[in-house]
Image (cartoon, rainbow, N blue to C red; front, side, top):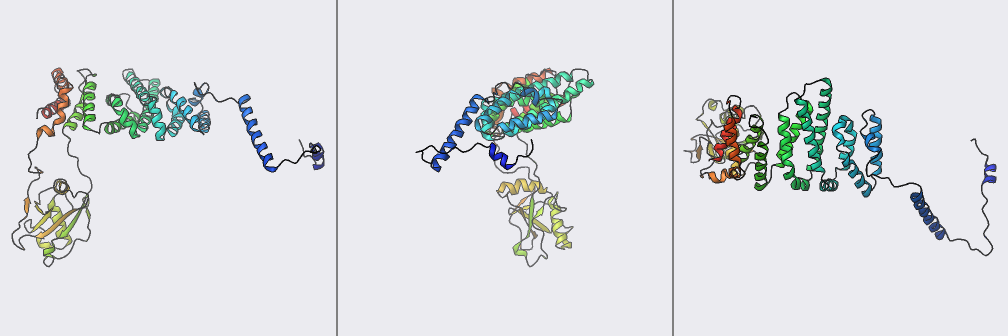
Length: 456
């Protein structure tokens, strides 16, 4: 088809018919409305007789294309096409329902499911869609798929390893890792986490313990999944006292699923119960100190600490209060007091600190307990006896943080849960089943510690 001269085009173009006699010219607004609604009628007619609405009930041809292991281009194209369909609420809803039905394909597809999972996570990332899918049971579906993948890994663990089985192990490890990340994404939504964590905590705990038992099939993917499951477990078990009691009951139920000759798996559960009944004090990280001269001795002490506030990680800021005293003497050129532990006093919260005390302990048990933990710890230094005998309290040891009597019933109240859910019987049963103490040393020590906490 070449160029057509303008004259030829005018001859071929339909001639405008003149208006019949007596007919009036159509008003511009009426002509506009006529074109508008005729176009709408034409579009509706074409949709109903020509283009059919896309059916998304079973996926049909879409499922094998989205997980095609031989063509990344095909997978990318299919995902882009599905994404382009999500231009309205109803279509997005239909697509998410369809993609949810594809989740069981992730295990067999392995790395070929990467594009599908990216699409699914991006579409379901908003809170309303997370809630919608959670109500449709997607969380339990993902947990069941994770359990299936872990069982596959344990079957491979008991099988002679060959190159083919090694490839299957990698596929299973990839699918397990991505499914765990998907579960974590849904649990980021507060409502879903509060509603479903009680139903999922048993499966997450069981999955974590099962991965800890892997030896031959342990890979970087399984290690990453194990760490992610532990993070999920931490998030799901922190809550009210009633929720903590439910988790303790789940722990006892989980222990009973493992044979009595398994000395390794229950150790983590019993250690967890110990930390719930009597939490260990957490070590503090970096904190800051402000070193100030006693205002009443301004005229007697030379120099000033110009680096306030000082980080606890700086040289000279620990580990003992004596090191802080020596730092002050060095920076202020108080050479005569450098080797004299009796010449200078350090006060925190208006109490004289022994120079043998660790700086971290002073910060945790003196400064933070006074309610000032949000600010840098204020340390006041002065010469001893310069203005008379000291009247402040002298703190020599920090073993007892306060003078109040400790109520064991209140401190160890969570131990009552083990009595109610049969935990004591399970612990004694485990102890009685141990035949070789040397092989079960970790289990014995943990059980004895837990029993001691329960009998306080």
